[in-house]
Length: 279
Image 1 (cartoon, rainbow, N blue to C red):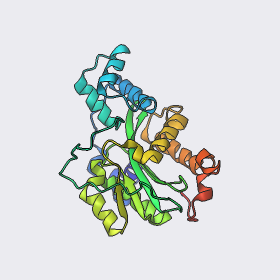
Image 2: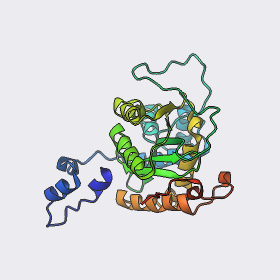
Image 3: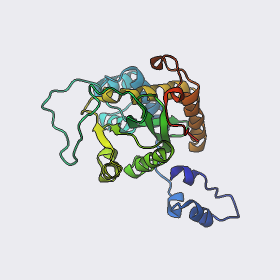
Image 4: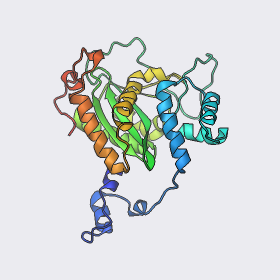
């Protein structure tokens, strides 16, 4: 949906914006919505937090607050918590077994513990991360096949919704078939009725990380580190379109050219069995 929305050009006289919206099945009212933008200082702090997470994912809000104050940012805890939520900061620390999860939504068990992943499309892992730009930020959703490390699908959006995640999964199913298991964290997008019903209808087993256990989805965390250190931080983009094209090129490189040490320096496409590749 967001990719189609970015394709609309309001400068064109023919066809009109209305006609372009009809052809792309995009709601025209969404084209004129101007979201509130973050201040320059907040964008700087978001970039600092995003880079810092790759170095010290065990930092909590108090250490981050002290670090930012030492760097000259006059930030209070309330603003810091809001910005940490934007960058999807999940502090790594041990929790007692009596920790209670949110009872509003059912949390599915983690199915990957002691599971031997021996073939393509046996297990896919999914997650959402924050991507900084020069003049704002976007969210990146990606799907990775755990056996081959092949990225079977991805997309950008300026918001995190279950509908967006489901649409990317649907496209990945069309290109690569369905996995047996999909693993995610316990984010609201992945505990929503829309997402759960979609996987149940597709007869896919649902697996979720334990609360506070970001390393349960370690392969996606490693993917985020690679994407950000090898592309995003080296190529700060100005617009969503520029970012989309840059990531499209990077994921092609990641799948077909970048050797992986854990794969014996093979590329993911060498191990990923389905013939259909990312178009």
